[in-house]
Length: 317
Ligand SMILES: N[C@@H](CCC(=O)N[C@@H](CS)C(=O)NCC(=O)O)C(=O)O
Image (cartoon, rainbow, N blue to C red; front, top):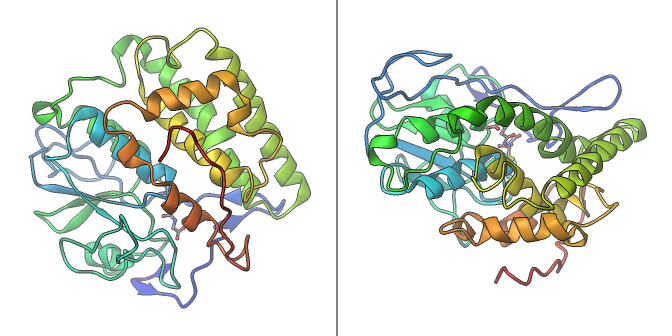
C-alpha cells in the first residue's frame, strides 16, 4: 500500500482485521463526481464536467467492483466515450500491474507499470491501498473517484447525452427499493464472500457464510417468477448481484470456503446469471481466466498458487 506517496515494501492481501478476526474493507479516498455541468457532486470538488473522451477507467477483470463499472459502460453503450485500461489479474509485490497477460493492457495514458503510480500522480502524498476501479480525468491528470458505487451512479446519469443505449438502471419509482436491496446485497453477499474468505477467526468466517447463503436462498426465492430482481426491468441491483454470482463457483466456493452450495445448484439463480451474461456486451466483461488466476494467486489463501481446472460453465467458452 501507499504511505505518504511511497509504496511500502510488501503487498498484503489482508485489509484491516477487527479484534474479532473480521475482514474490514478500506474506505475509498477519491470521491469527486463527474456531473453534466461540472458542478460539485455529493462529495469532493467541482470541475469534472461530463465530456466524451475526457475520462478513463482503470479496471481489473478479476475484480467484482471494477467489473460492475465495466458492465455499466456496456449497458449504456459508453465504450466510445470512456476509454479503459485493464491490469493483470495477479497482484504483484507492488499491487496491480499493467502487462501482457491475455486481455490485460499497458497504461495507455502514461505508460505506468503499476497502478499505484497513477495514485501518486494524482496526489503525491496519498496513503492507502491502490485499488481498482479508478475513474481518471485525462484533462486534469487526476483521479476523480475510486469508489465503484459512486462510479456506477455517474455512468448511469452524467453521460446520458452520449449513451447509445437509453437504459436507466435506477428508475425513479424504484430508487429507494434499489438502494435498500443494494445495501443488504453488499453486506451479506458482495462483501460477505470476502468476509468469509479473509476471516481470521472461525466465528467471523461462520457468521459471514451464514449471511452469504441466507441471501442466496432469499434471492433464489425472489427470482422464481421474475426475469430480474425488480421484475421486467434490469436495474443497478442486478449488475451488483451478477458480478458476485459469476465469480461464485469459480472462486468463492473453493478459495473463500463458501461451499454450502454452488450457484449451479440454484435453479433460478443460475438461469438468471446466464440471462444477464448473454445480454449484449456483458460476456466481454467476464474473463474467467482472469478471475481464477487472480483469486487463486492470493498466496495467503493458496500458498502453492495452484489454479483449479473447473468449474465448467456451459454458456462460457
Ligand atoms: N470500495 C472499492 C473497493 C475496491 C477494491 O477493493 N478493489 C480491490 C480488487 S477487487 C483492489 O483493488 N484491491 C487492491 C488492494 O487491496 O491492494 C470499490 O468498490 O470501488
